[in-house]
Amino acid sequence: MSDLERIAAAAAGDAGGLDPSLLGGFLTAVVAATADGRRLRRRELEACAASGRRAAVQGVALRALVDLYLSAAWRLWRDAPDVAGGDAARVRGSALAVLRAADDGVAALVEGFQLARADVIRLQEAVKHDVMEALLAGGQQAIEATGPAADIGLTLSGPVAVLVVRRPSGFGGPDTAAIPGRLERALQGRHGDAQPLVLIRSGEVVCVFAAPDAAAVATVRDVVTRELDRAVRGPGRAWRGAVSSPRIGASAVRTSHDEARYALDLADRLRLEQPLVDARDLTIYRVLLQDLPAVHDLVRSTLTPLTRARGGAGHLVETLDAYYSTGCVATETAARLNLSVRAVTYRLARVAELIGRDPADPAERLTLHAAVTAARLLDWPSTPLD
Image (cartoon, rainbow, N blue to C red):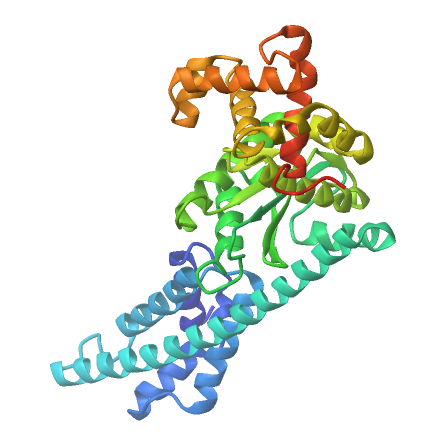
């Protein structure tokens, strides 16, 4: 083994066991530059940049790569003939030559690494985009995306779920463009088994992730909620999300995506307080809306008499909604609506007078509660019934 090979091997060990060939011709170039009292030439710098590009493609960490080169440089200077037994001027001259060559070489190395890394990231983002579009297209396209999805870390052979997040101004601007990467890093850190694929699509954050059990879904929900609360700030509710039911296979991703988006629409109509909802918790509302004519008849036959009240039906429907949401407790209803208990009981009595049904009667409660829920889903009375 030659002296330069021995130095390269020792430097590779210093850098955590990297491949010594990543040094390329760096040591030979430094020796030649030191002997001639010159800086590294263009072709020598281009060789360093090429090594940086190769390391980036191989997934080598930049810190370790720089450590390899700097370690090789100081070991080379320590073993240089001018250092052992040379006078002070020659030692200083050798040191300066090696340091300057190392500085130029590492600068070229880092530039090559960063450019190649940017290319890799762009390629990976393009692959992610293509995989996501194929999965959301469904059918044969989704099935054919199974292999590419596995290549970027998302295994579709088990249950997967889809989480969709919106905010009033949308996602994708300079202030939120980094959110997909932030979510992926958070989920791949302590929760790497989520195998997330996160992208911004049509102004929404879409996350497809492995969902083998309820605990895995809950973990993803917690991580996403924490990270978005940190990243997205604004007046009122800054964002809202929904997660689908877990389903198996690539062809089911489109169904899960549609389910999550529909759950978001329902959450908006219902004005739910929680920022991230589970589509399974909204099943009853989806059932109600499957037969729109029947739902319209329910609201029309049960609640339209409230329109005869002074000020219209809106405040009475709001009171009924709060009353049933608080378990039919007048004091809690009053607190939620910022009213006195007396005002709440007056409104409930007025409802009973207008519709001929007592809101507190257990026999009437189911029908009235369903009608009020349907009214919220239809945005009635603000939106007239068909």
